[in-house]
Figure 1 (cartoon, helix red, strand yellow):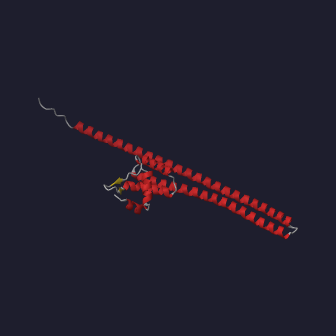
Figure 2 (figure 1 turned 135 degrees about the vertical axis):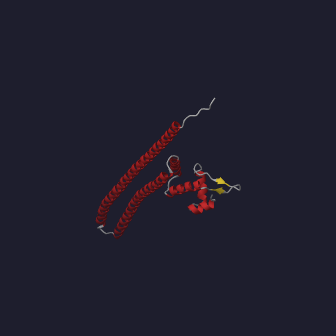
Length: 232
């Protein structure tokens, strides 16, 4: 049994978060208390808290965490311990991969928007400054310079459009790769479920054979043992 300070130190979770998770995920965390009201945690609570911490570190919402915990609870009732540990590891890898892919795509999108804004602002500032200088000088070639800058801005805009298109294609490629990875994960998940099903069927078959052997043994034993009736 562990106190709340022990759990906080062992799992590196603040006491405030532990108390908050106790309220949010009350269906999955059953905390006992001593006579004086102190919280007492068992090994089962530590296992659940580790899973919650793993998913919250990946920025999953409370609703998603509860959904996954509920799914895990249903699966753990039927899957043997060895298979369950492999399943937990695979699930952690899926969560990490999905979160990392989403973050990369988001970073690319944010960088693209920032680049567009900074470029447009820089071009406008430079063009305005040069035009003001030429107007102040009263130079007759101001119109030509403005026209030249206009062409430069147009050419630069075309180049930027091409760069934006390239970045868009890169984002689409990243999304396609993400979908491909998700498909592979789903295929592996199906194989895993098939393995679990085969494991259960094999276990059931072995159990049936064992029962038949027991029944056969007792029938043979009874057939060899003569029946003795009491004399009247």
